[in-house]
Length: 189
Image (cartoon, helix red, strand yellow):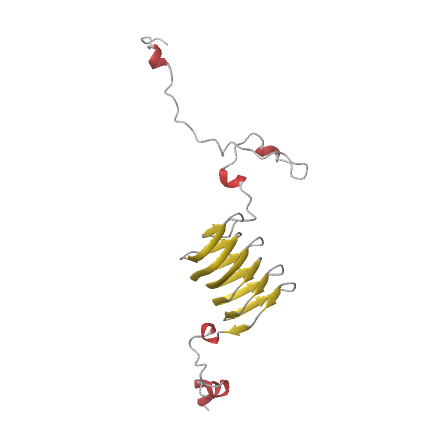
C-alpha cells in the first residue's frame, strides 16, 4: 500500500495449474434409498469413492470385466477376477482365480486357488483349494488338495484329492498304518 505501485502484470496472481476435476467433481445423484450425508454435501468425491466396490476383487490383481470376451490362453503371475467370458486355457500357477457371478468360462484352469461364483465348463486344477459358491456351477473334473462346495452349488464331474499338495512332508506311498508305526513316538516304547 505504501510502497511503489505494481504494474498490472505484477498485481495479477499467477494462474493456478489446471486441476483434473473431471471425475473428482462428479457427485452421485441423490436417491430416495440412499440419501447423501449432510457432512458430505458439496464436497468433491475421489474417483475411487465413486466406483462401486461390489464388483471389484479384494486385494491386488487383474480384472476381466463383464463385457469382455477372451478366446485363447490367459497366463500370468497375479490374481485374476473374471466377470466376462473366457474360452481356452487359464494358467495362474501360484495365484488365485475368482470366477465372478456373471462370468462364463469354457476353459481348463490351473491355479493355486480357484473360487467359483459363476459358471465353468472345463477341468479345474488347484494346488491349494477349490471353492464352489452357492450360485456357482462347474461341469468338469476337479483336482485339488482341499475342496469346498456350498449348498445350492451345481457340480457335475469327478473330484481327485491331490494328497501330495496337502502335506509334502508325509510319504503317502506307504500305507497310513505303516507311517503311524514308524513315527518316533511309536518307536520310543
